[in-house]
Length: 135
Image (tube, rainbow, N blue to C red; front, side):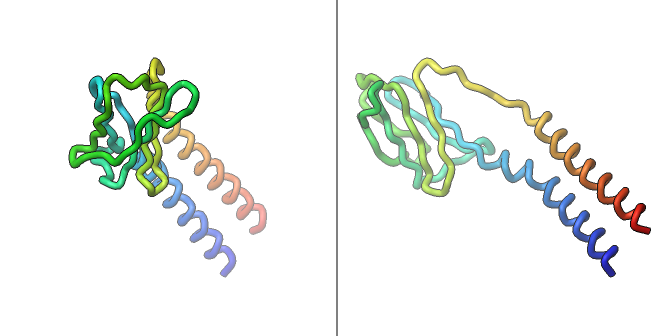
């Protein structure tokens, strides 16, 4: 009975571990300066939330402008504003930042996926050896 419980626990853990990378990558959000006076927000998988609100800050952290995105996921603002940083928040836990002069960082998903499989493999190996020693 205990052995069946351990095997089912391992199976459930593997299923969850294999599904997590897809879930976590589907929820990334980007904030892009599309052109002077226009910021565009979108999720990594495409689309955006119409509830997203964008706030623009100057170098001292003072709020310069704030408002919701339009029906295209864009926020229009006075192009004469000296933007240092802009923050997009969809109210559901997703947040993206744009910073003047910062280069975009794209992290490869392959090492993360390999890491998840490695951790899952180690977990299965440890528990299968533990079960063999107990039998």
